[in-house]
Structure formats: C-alpha cells, structure tokens
Image 1 (cartoon, each protein chain N blue to C red):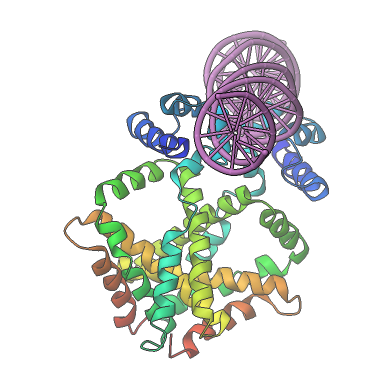
Image 2 (cartoon, rainbow over the protein chains, first blue to last red):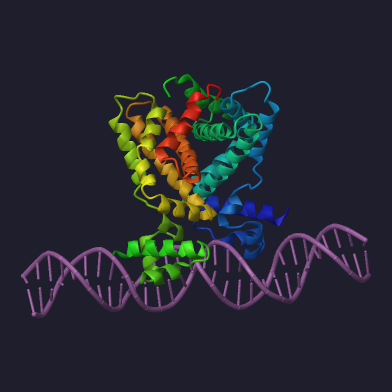
Length: 181
Length: 181
DNA sequence: AAAATAATGTCACAAACTGACATCGAGATT
DNA sequence: AATCTCGATGTCAGTTTGTGACATTATTTT
C-alpha cells in the first residue's frame, strides 16, 4: 500500500477515535509508519487528507450531461438527473460516507473545505452544460442543481431506507411542483 | 478607536500592500500598536479579521422578508427582492467592497471562509421564510436566492455602471424568463 | 550493474495559535 | 482622594501546522 493510502486510513481511524482537532499530523504519520514531512508532501494541509482531489463526481455528472443532451433540453433537470446518476457512489458505501460526513460536520475547517470542493463541482457542471446552453444560464442551473444535491444528501443521511437518487428527485420535485416558488 | 478596529484597518492596509499570505499577524498587530496575543483575542484566526461576524446582511434580508409577507407570496421572488433591498450596502461603498473582494479572491483560505459565511446567510433567509412557507421549500428558496445573489455580485463587480439591485433582478429574470430551465 | 529518477527522511525554522498568569487603566465604591 | 474591581492588554512559554534545503534510500530505466 502506498504511503498516501496508509495516511488516509490512519487519519480516518484517528479522527473517528479522538476527533479531528485532537489528533495531530504527527500521530497520523506515526500510525502510518512515515514521517510528518511525508504527510505534507502528500497533502497540502491536515484537512486535505479527508478530501478526494480528483473530482470524480464532477466528471461523472458532466459525462452524464454530455451523453444526454439530445433527450433532455432543460438544463436544471438535466443536471439534477446527472446527480441522480451517481447515486451508486453513495448507496454502495453508506457506512463510510456517513462516517466521513460526521467528521466533517464536527469541524468548521472541514466544512469550509467541503464548501470549496462544491465550487469545483459547480464549475464542472457549468462547463458541461455550457456546450449547449447559454453560459450564464448554465451556471445558474449548475448552482441550483448543486444546492438540490446538497439538500438531497442531507435527507439521504437522515433516512437510511431511501436511496440517494430517490432523494435527489424528491427535492427536485419539491421545486418543480411548487408553482409558487 | 478600539483595538479591534485598529487591527482591522491595519490588516486591510497590509493585505492590500503585500498580499494576505505575505503579511503576518505579528505585522498587523505591530501596525495597530498592540501585541499578537491581542489580535487572537479579537479574532479567532488570521482570516477572521476580514469578516464581519454580525451577519448584517442576513438580518436586513430577513427583515425585508418579514415585512413583505402579505404582498408577495412566492418565496424565491421574495428572498431575491430581499437581496435587492440591501443594494445600498454595496453601491455606497463600491471601492471598499471591491478591494475586499479582490483580497478574498486571491486566497483559498479566505474563499473558504466566505463560503462558510454564506451558509449563515442561507440560514437567516431560511428562517425568515419558514414563518410562512414549508421549511424545506424555504430552505430551497433561500439557497437559490443566495446563488442568485452571488452571481449578481460577480456581475456587479464586472460592470461599474450598473447598480447592485439591477444585477440581482437581471439574474432573477434570467431564471424566470427561462421556461426551459 | 550503473545511472537516473522518485519517494522518503532529517533537520532547522517560520508562522499560527493557546493557556496561564501578570499588569494596567478606567470607572464604581467607600 | 484612596481603594477596589473588572475587563482589556501584555508577557511568556509552549504546541501544532506547514515549508525549504539537502541527505539518503528505493525503484525504475538503460
């Protein structure tokens, strides 16, 4: 196992056990069997160890959008369906996603980082939509879609019995059915 | 002048002159004529010195919403008008707002903090709307409204000739006129 | 196997933050 | 006026995060 992965595993363990603020990078490195310096070569800072920089979800949603341009012509609906299409990402590893989410909710620094990641998600979706739609409309739809995604995520956490896609569509319908919005 | 204000003024000066990352808390404190320790008693961290914790805008938007409940019954439109109603906040001190925005855009840490502040804005607006609307619909409308506000802010920065309220309404109309969203 | 390249270690240090305790100053109490 | 009180500030010592420079050790290439 690469040291990067070892560090991620070690960090997750310690954050769960002692909380984010109470575990030092020193400890994470020790548990992973490397030095502190190596940690900071793999991750730009302490919080970074919890975040996937590859924007997998952004790519998947963008790919979905690009694929379905011909069948669906409303940008928001298209983007929302894009998010619904990555539901396996969540449903498959509910435990892990939940644990990670709890750690993040426990600390403002981590929440901030999560928020910043959401901006790159917006960008990906905006870019994908921009191929066929006006750029400002694309951005607006992308932003709305990400907010819908976020609310769906929270609902998904609260109710273990429903799938992720289901929650995404539920929030979208809350919007669509509400003529009075 | 209280030391808190002195620190804010000193920080603004230094951030403009040398950039955020290149100025130390030490320097800010010196310029303000106090010690580093005092800085950290007034602000929870370095970035905090740039942010108003009082959520003035949130309160104003919420107040507007509460006031206008009878005349307007679409939550999103109501919230958007709330944001348009605080336009003086921006138009009056364009220079300062612009300078601050530039500093923030220059550094990821600051962007993160700004994003976190946006969450408390969402909360304020959600709460105000919740008095008359379903709570989930309120949150969704609040989130959409804040996104509209954000896009309007960016446009406002780019075009010095147009007022803030004007930009807010322009983005809202982009949404409303777009049957195809 | 030798050479090149990448990953890790070592060390020294700056900067951000915190806790504990001392001091100062202005306003209230006597 | 002298004293008392309390909140703001200073002092200091220490932890933690994060970085640059250079040495050492794996790994891969030739």
